[in-house]
Length: 152
Image (cartoon, rainbow, N blue to C red; front, side, top):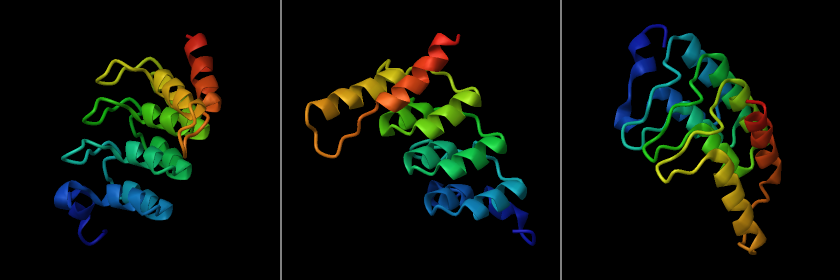
């Protein structure tokens, strides 16, 4: 990377080097790429996913922390207009949700369907209570989001 710094900004097939490192759960590589000057808010071409959204949806809280430390914007949206906080809410990832909220994520942000992260958590919780196999109980993340909404 130091011999060819343009590599940190390349996007082969719509995915940058940073996106690939996040997908592959390479936290040290993510930090090296960011130190080399990669944009933590670079989007994939087709889905408009940011490295932060990918880190949340792949359940990589240590990488979420690194990306936020390097200035990743927690309010950027992907093609479906959801944010990283929407994904954390759906996955009941209270740790990532708290980090995102502390970094300024908007708990009232609405996706393309007009749903907030809290509504994503509640919807998933209802699906789980109806007996959907593999579902999660999202009470924990819903509580974290409610704390931030009440703190406004």
